[in-house]
Length: 435
Image (cartoon, rainbow, N blue to C red; front, side, top):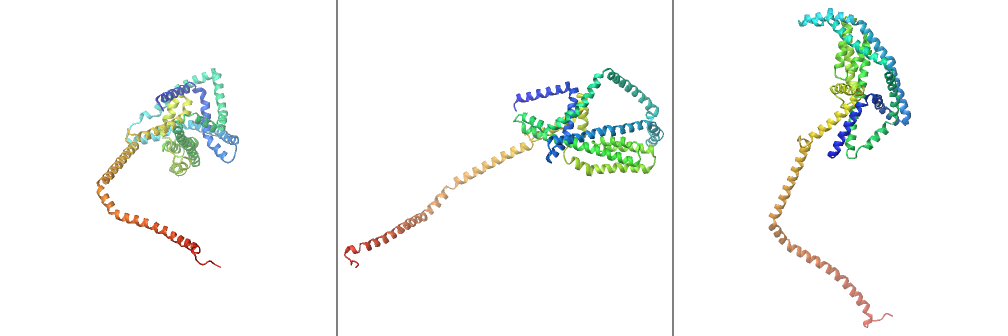
């Protein structure tokens, strides 16, 4: 790739970034649909492998995805809303427990004064933030009420997502093939290799880690519900969704569940049961969910995931949040490729430089061996002449013997032929004629 090609690629990248920034509100439903299509394409390919047509496989997968989304909206979200309302009703009880039990115990054990965490101070701080949030929410709702076009636009984008998802699912392989055909032939193998690695990284997180998160949320919620915690669904789903950071989900969920159990039950037996639920969840994740759903693929680091989501939301809004993980996966793969190229270069002195030095050493050794062979040949001319002189009589006698053998062989048939000629000439010389 020449310098001109590099500058053209850089200009194209900057242009695409500017277009994404300007068209972010329009591209949001298309990005969401592309994400759903990416998640559903492997299942469509598996159904195609079982001799189903592409359209039939897409119809089945699209129906399953629609049922999952509709079920989550109609069942899970109302349950979470009820749990949040119950938490709001019990918030004074939690505050009283913290004020009368938790803070005095901490002050007694540590000797530190925690007057700034008193209830009246926390309530005053919450009132200030609540007033600011209420003012901002009022401005937002007033803007939405004045602009019915914004509401219609939101509903239109929401209805556009399933339509675009269906068509992208149907033509996903065709689109990928067309994009591959447009790649320059000089960089096509490298781009395909990096794209495959980015797909593995992104797939290990979206299809693997996301499944682990949802499974852990379900395990924690069911376990806490069996223990008898009122806020089981809220705490369990929160712990599951934060579990992509190792041990963070367990720490947050266990802490919240212990506080809820102490406030609600206040005995050691339920505390032991809550600890058992989270311990069993961690064992299931380590020995079953992660090896089965994620495997040994190198996924995305939790810090990279957090930074990518925050940076994407800051730069491009909700579209940036949707595109954060794919872009982060591609960036991580490219950085790994550049790191490998750098460590193999002569600038770093890595494998490439060592291979170069090894080949140079082997060439020098072969040159030395060739020089030694020439010196031995030049140092032994007299020995070679004496050996040839000593072998001269033997060779000459062998030549004479070889020369004699064909002469004898040649005379023998001549003698036999002469006798036959004499026998034929016998009667002509006056011998007796046969009667």
